[in-house]
Amino acid sequence: MSRAITMEEPIRVGILGGGQLADMLALAGYPLGLRFRVLDPNPAAPAGHLAERLTGAFDDPAALDRLADGVRVITYETETVPVTAVRHLRLRGIAVRPGRRPLHVTRDRFHEKRFLGRRGIPTAEFRLVTSEAELRRAVDELGTPVIAKTRTLGYDGRGQTRIHSARDVSAAWNAGNGRPLIVERFVAFRRELSLVCVRSLTGEIRYYPLVENVHVEGILRTTTAPAPGITAAIQTRAESIGKQLLETLDYVGVLAIELFETTDDLLVNELAPRVHNSGHWTIEGAACSQFENHLRAILGWPLRPTCARGHAIMLNTIGRIPSPADIAVDEDAFLHDYRKTPRPRRKVGHVTLVDSDPERLAVRARRLAPILAEIERGAP
Ligand code: AMP
Image 1 (spheres, rainbow, N blue to C red):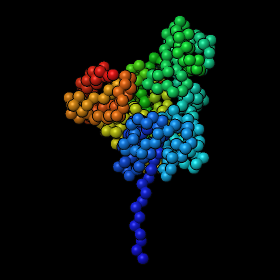
Image 2 (spheres, rainbow, N blue to C red):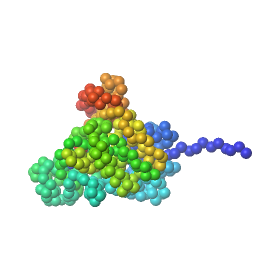
Image 3 (tube, rainbow, N blue to C red):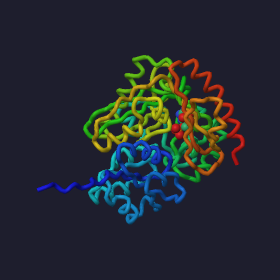
């Protein structure tokens, strides 16, 4: 008897969040035969081209059920997802990776700092304050300058206030609308680094090389990969922090660790339980991108190598996207347009340059940066 040939159903992946990170995940997964469905509260979220887009709130059980229908696994591209959404999906028998605990730890700066502190992982010294009087005491104890940050929903420098002297305390407290704040000692770092690492369902772990990040007013501007001048000892130190975090959280997927490099150590600034802007260079600059490895990890597939192919610089385009003609001075620049409405301070795309020669790469980046800055100045 001849066997009936049936078309296999494609594997579907659900994503909480339909921003550019979901879009880049779908782009990486499409050649692997994967199909995607995203859920986002914003009907204009960019990831509705390669993925089926649902519009709905993350805490709407009916929307979560529609996202879960027929998918193999669900992941998230933002830590603003409420933990209750993950619980709801788990109760429906759907795997969410990374799971509930990484989300609980990272969506609140206080939980994150306490979690790191209890495991002996160094961070900037901090206080949790719930009143203006406590803020004043914290500033007194830590010494100025300090940075006050909201516990949740702060990104790209939003929800952050620098306090330079005791005179700034009232204004900083009022800016937070009475919400509790984390107050951090200002770290005189040498530079900012990040480690993107990935752990598969099978427990396999891989690390990308440390990269150097330059932020302006809290917004990531450029990533240089690998970070220049990294010794084996620093890479190993960062990887040991990564391993500890991945294993303690029984983490599955890509984790990004933002670090301050000081004269004698690495301090963890922030964790992102997802693919990360400082890993965008991996699309063209690494053997396998963070996006593909994230998908491989959450599906339990073997991971692919994370080594750099030469040197890369990623420049974020802020406010307004250049056209291909705008950046044609560099004939080998990779442009990524997130198809977002132009707006000042908003990341709307990025450009990656890859080169075998780091000096030539730096020259190319210096030629391109003023063009991107000029376009940004024209943002509406
Ligand atoms: P965050 O939102 O916590 O990642 O902060 C955004 C940026 O603000 C960081 O990448 C740093 O450039 C700067 N920053 C945040 N916290 C501190 C700190 N405690 N000391 C010095 N700079 C900081």
